[in-house]
Length: 509
Image 1 (cartoon, helix red, strand yellow):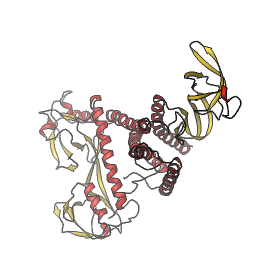
Image 2 (tube, helix red, strand yellow):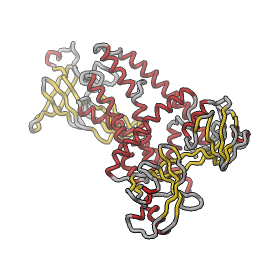
Image 3 (cartoon, helix red, strand yellow):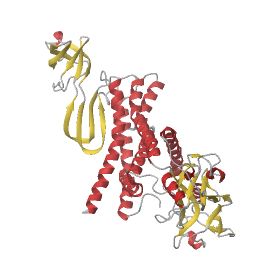
Image 4 (tube, helix red, strand yellow):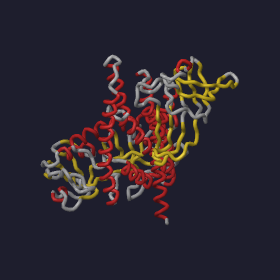
């Protein structure tokens, strides 16, 4: 029963997160289209098939330069379009005219001389609930046909660009808000990656070369990588299948160079050489009080602090735990490990004062962001992720990307549940920010039918002096692009399912 309940919570959490991501994106398209006068035919919660139309806005129709109000429940003819010839009736309602009857007239009919053309029209937006609860969609008038008056396809390029960019803009805004607010709500945790071996897999290149837990990798092919995991990891992946020379520190002794061959296709979870490394979780120092214990120990703002509070090496959880610890241990000498610019420094020793007040109990450290710091923290986090994406794409092209670099919907489901177990719901919200930013950047790729691909059509139209691309050709390119995307996601999902069923984690240990 408990397992069933936990599964239900996992599904609900994942559905809400994915729904928010897509819903926010579509909400951007909706608002900007409405604001710029492009009719929105439908705003759907979830994806079809439709379950329920719970609301419909009133619309309007312009005939003989008069804008006529269309009641919410008035049924317009399906063949009514901009430019159609119509016969109609209205009734007054205060200062406006309300449509009571309308029919489309064929140009060759006897009624044609008495009919009037429709100059512009908005049928009103239908708000619907659909069967697949994974986000939503916006259906605009004239999306596929540039000949429909007042529709998206016939709008000016600037209008189409604004509508297309609105979705990714909303995802950027969501990511910023999430990162800014969680930066204040969560302690500023930062991973401090070492190159000290935590374990060595049996029969791996590292084990066969004689490496042991506790060894520190100092150089790879003569390049210094001590406590510089990204460089070390990249060098090992780049040299897969080739012999590399490692310099190892074991205790106080530096060993002679050891040669091994990183694997191009290692067993799951082992990496190219079969090692697991020590990773500490530290706290980013937001500020240091001049003349304080921390300042005298050499701590600077921006450093990452790993504070050893017991023999097992448990780091600080937050600012409050620092205060509790210092008050409980007046006069004690403590050892700190600091990381600066992604490099682990030598340990420093500081002494807790014998007498502490509310101010000195922090030892001069500020480990929590304020609301004033939130915008900067949000932007910093967005920049870090945005800069990492091109690097990851380069690694994918070269075939040296880390495991689980690309995941589909099922992989996101697994990652969401792992994040929830490790960091709680606030960590899941932070993951939402990362996914929202990734979705925004991905949607800007100039690939049909993504928003970036549609923007490319508008740019090509501008370069061609306003000459549009043939709608049939554009539709065919969109169809091929959609087929490629779906095929790619099916392949990714296959590996996602394989990993999920095998019980392998998606997050690194």
